[in-house]
Length: 321
View: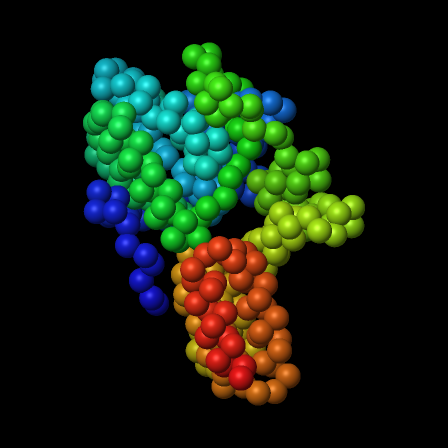
């Protein structure tokens, strides 16, 4: 596998999140994903439960998720929260902050491989990265968030999400006070978003298709449909079996497509693209077009603005001609 783009030095050190399992029906979906969607809100979830956290980690494929492993009895923990909350809300959906109480639920520390808090961990596409364990100046923290967002974009995580909660009592929820609040999602987009949150990808795809019927030029619905399709295709895959099948059958286009889907979902964008480009170059028959069409669909999942998409399009052109 190819290496993902390097993180800033103070963000390195990913840990294993294998102990977090995807729930059959994400807990807290009403509170975490639905609150505050009608107007100005906050992207800070206080007192997050394990169900909330599991759901938010799934969202980390769209936006970075900051997890504050808080220690309420430690004054520095509140200082960290006071530092982070307004900075997160000012970015209006480009990232999320969830605070968990490790004194009430110490198992959260074990999940992230830590012995003590407070600490802040960022999760990108399911991969946790240590961020800080003590208060820092606001300017330094804002720079850190900017670097995190840049690293996230390099790894294909560059979306936005609706508010998680109503605007906070200190008035810092949503964008800066001088700016208008973020609009809510169109109804069919919200329906699709909610369906994805509960793992009903067929319902999400149906909502996006209806949105496209209403407006064939709805770019966000087109992208959402391809993303929901990726989630649906990979939801029940046995990764080891899929990879074994592809290794044993290098000329099987569907086997190569399946591995490309898994790679893309896991953040290995270059691996996914390169696998299909190589297949296209080596197979001039009908399978070539099947692989090409699927590769173009994966481009839309990642986005044309991503440099990896542009590089792969050039490689695809060479493979075809």
